[in-house]
Image: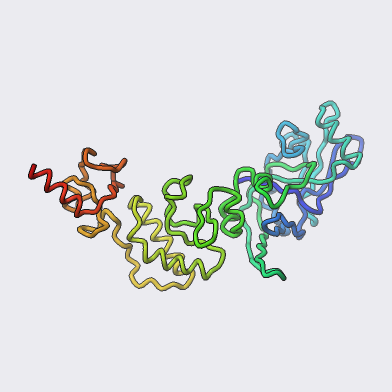
Length: 338
């Protein structure tokens, strides 16, 4: 997902020479930038790989594609990886309204900040407590994956509000960032409150409908390791009780749960996946479809015509009818005796 940053310490000035233009530093190395949710630092060499791939980057005013000032493909925008950071030079067109206006505002000093649009391929995180006992999240950007645009901006990004989220992450906050900064989850998307925290869907092992929090189950990612381990143990205990998920989803969730337990030092005595609802034989949690195949424990051969079934997916591999087997059997016996 694309990210945008106004870089503290960036420079913008009129380009020297006969041709009109602007130049500056679009991103500064080793400069801490407080976004309002986390503190970011771009490490030296972060632009090496992306610039080596000769990307087609635009110089835009306020990230607006309608305000095109220059482009690397045409040679009117030139980028370089310097000791201080990402530097650029852009030849502006005095015959275009946007080019003339931007040039004039830079000359007057009305425009003096730069911003970039990018995606990240390599980053590292750490958490520290400040003097108030609050967690501060630090993100070091070590390598950029893509560079979309660079150019002057009127305002730095808003911080601390949902407007700021859209400004910094116009396509939504990347999962990597959300997973490390809990406060961004509720601001970015629909969240489900669990144990006093607002959790986004990537904090759950099982997600039915991404837009319906009622279908999110087995939460695991919390702000503290203590809470995370508590809920991982709870997920182990509850795993065989969840309903409404396909065998494939359950298998993936179980594999992830084992991996997380190993990471957090939680011992799992039996690593064999608990039987799903459909495979549980005569147990109370077994598939409750009233067809004879399911009654015999062969849910894979389900041939229910849907007449006596409340499930929208009856007849499919993920058939889950929501009744217990005893009730289903009683209904079948009554039907046979009538």
